[in-house]
Amino acid sequence: MDLNDEDLIRRVVEDGDQRAYAQLVRRYQSQLRFSLRQLCNGDQGLADDMAQEAFIKAYKALPAFRGDARFSTWLYRIAYNLVMSHKRKNTPEVDQDAVDRAQAQESVEEAQQLGMARDLNSAMGELSDAQRQAVHLCMQRGFSHEEAATIMKLPLGTVKSHVNRARAKLQSLLQAWREEVVSG
Image 1 (cartoon, one colour):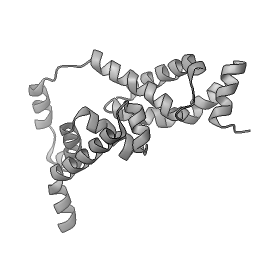
Image 2: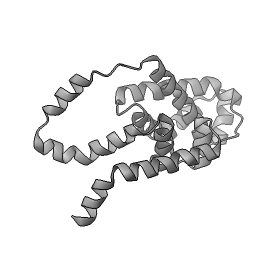
Image 3: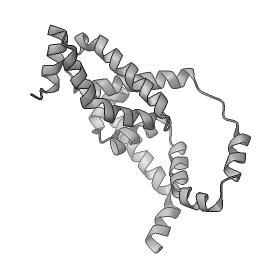
């Protein structure tokens, strides 16, 4: 029998049913790991570690879960906080010379194949952290603006502004690709 989130949570909190929590983990593990990989700049190992830590934290905090938001939103907020905390603690200094040398070694064919992806990543890098996170939540993960506002702990209007400004900036920065696709 496939129970809904509320029933599974009730079983975990009231009966200590670890199988019910395992079912919640199975239900959300893939999408959480995917989202975390995006937030961790593609680092699958770090994303997996953050997902595991988020599920452990959520399990311990489950008795305090009030149900004001969906379980998935609450879980994503925990994971998001973990990643942001990790990033604050581990912000590396970028060796731009090393980056430039690595880029110079790429073959012309690879550069052409990766051109649009690189330009998109570069354009995403031009966005503020808040804009990038809002775009990821709303446009890539499909969260509503309201859910993104809850996850990011920002007012709804601020999240909408971040998404709209990011969209406009991305369109401007990627205009050359747009023209090439239309004319090509």
